[in-house]
Image (cartoon, rainbow, N blue to C red; front, side):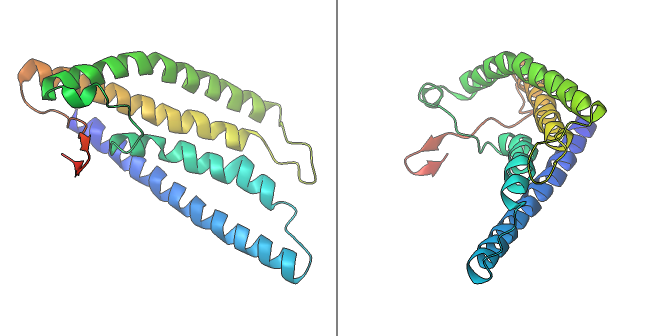
Length: 180
């Protein structure tokens, strides 16, 4: 299981770096677009579509698994904060069991949609005919990696309960003073 975890972590890091680079590109495009718009009255006609169709989608979907792995997603821990470590493991097992089928479905449908968009050479209608498969493929890539992370964490939580050892870390509790 350690080998699989290393692969997942490596892919998450690559995706996180790409997402961070996409954020930088977004900022550069916005600065350039605003500068050209107000200084030369010549905005970038493709900026809005590029950012909305590709860059923001990439930032979100490529960073979703790494964010989950780092326990940085928004969580409703009203009940979980009153549970002990074992109870928190059961809560995470429940969450994973509920989430895995949903994210499998999203990954499957997203991959099918990206494939159809690619095969049919689908593009947006507008000044620039942006291919839609590029944005579509980001969904199954990001959610598929999250799915692998959920499966790995589910197996680790079950193994932790079975052995009594921490095979995967428990999500930290957030208190009024910060993390536990």
